[in-house]
Length: 160
Image (tube, rainbow, N blue to C red; front, side, top):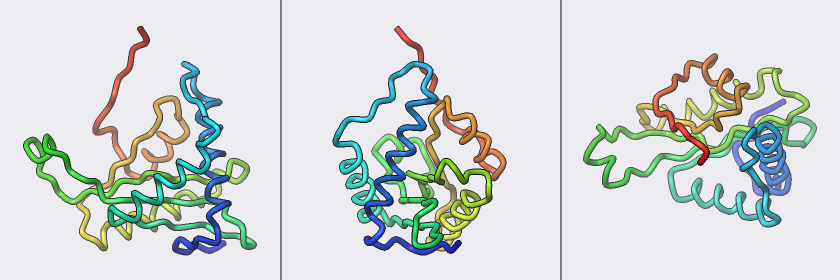
C-alpha cells in the first residue's frame, strides 16, 4: 500500500468511495434523513474538488494494486464575518472526507491518511484541524478521539 497525492485517473474510484460512505451513513441513520439522490455521485465529487482547488486543499489516496482503498481530502476553512468578530481566526484545516473501504477498515489505513493530511496542514501553518462527524457515526467518533481529536463544537438536534 502506498499513499499518493491526487491523480485524476482515479476520479471514478473516488466517486465510488464517496457513494460507499454515503450508503454507510444512510445505513446508520436512525432518523432516516440521510438520502442519496441520483446526482450525488457526480455532484458531491465536483463540490469536493472545487473546495480543494479553491481553499488550499489537498487530496491523498491510499493505493493498493492500482486500486484506491482509502482517501482523505482537506481544505483550509474560510472565515465568515461572525468568525472574524468572535474568533482568533487562526488558520484552520478542515478534513472534508476521510474514507476507507468498508471491507478493510481497522487496518491502520485511516490513521496513515489522517497523519498525512495533518502533516500537510502543519506545513502550511494551520493551528488546528476540524472535522464534522455525523452524530450516529460512533465508529468515526471513536476513531478521531483515539487520534487526539476532542469534541469542540457540538450541534444538537431535536425532531419536531
